[in-house]
Amino acid sequence: MPRPRATPEERTEQRNRIRAAASSLYDEKGTAGVTVRAVAERAGTSPGTIYSYFENLGELMRSLWADPVTAA
Image (tube, rainbow, N blue to C red):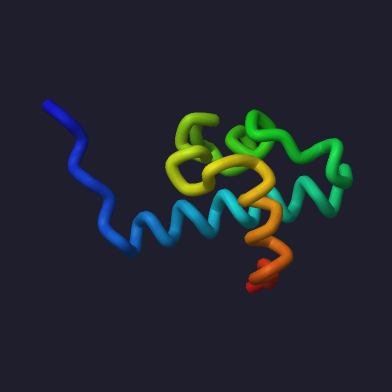
């Protein structure tokens, strides 16, 4: 039985978790520390899931510059 589709709110939440993970890795280790595998591990998801939300790592990084992640 397939998993139910994520709601728009769940997708937004997951995208934000991925972006926050990438942002914290960038703050800690710079660009060299931001890899798909590291972001996925920090976000608690699989590397394949990253590609469901971002075409590639460059797009993920551009999203951080275009719309910075703010601390809550």
